[in-house]
Image (cartoon, rainbow, N blue to C red):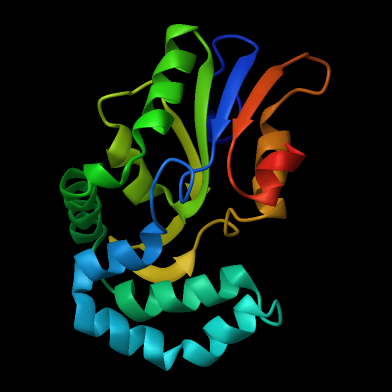
Length: 192
């Protein structure tokens, strides 16, 4: 048993990044468009453009920018409504999954490996993409909910960069030997 109740059947693990590795695009803007519409997304991103530019210049924290954007669009929404958006987003956007990525996941599962998706994306919208593969486990950014409504805050640090490495390292008992294969396009995956 590991972090968040993840269970390891054996010591062979395949780690997959989500955005840009298993998908053909960054799912944050695509999910926002799906949930609130293109115009609201454009207006919201316009309001936060200075922060987005600072983030891209590494002058403002990625996680903080993402959390502020998330709050702008989803604070106060019920978890039930948000999860319904997540389900329909995955159902309507299965085409963004890369066939070779899915094949790699299926091959890992056929070999009896543990498969983990390690993503900066919100876990709620990543999980539905793998509903037909219940063995796949997701480590992502968690959202805070109070009295059934999204607070606009994250319940965990944004699972990006060094946080991905920290989360993966936290899963494994140092005394055990694990065989890990990582698939990704980010520097964080390369450090695992």
